[in-house]
Image 1 (cartoon, rainbow, N blue to C red):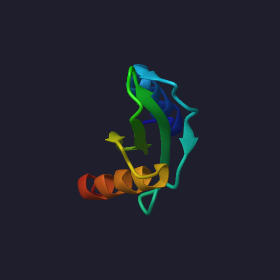
Image 2 (cartoon, helix red, strand yellow; image 1 turned 90 degrees about the vertical axis):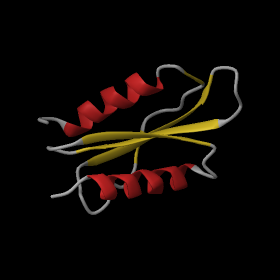
Image 3 (cartoon, rainbow, N blue to C red; image 1 turned 30 degrees about the horizontal axis):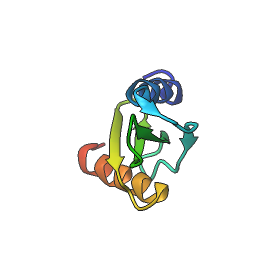
Length: 90
């Protein structure tokens, strides 16, 4: 991937397009594997439940997680990093 941060923003936009009241895409710490990581908070149409779309991108991978009812946005970002560390190997 030539521009990981740009590709990540496009992927988060695509996944969160169906959300009502989505927030801005914000950067989060990408963890030990580096690259870029970001999240967007929102709510599904007709729901008051928090949905957080988190993702990462680097020159070899891009991944997204969607977490419903996270206790807080930082917790959702930590879960995304747990998933990343479980599935990405170097």
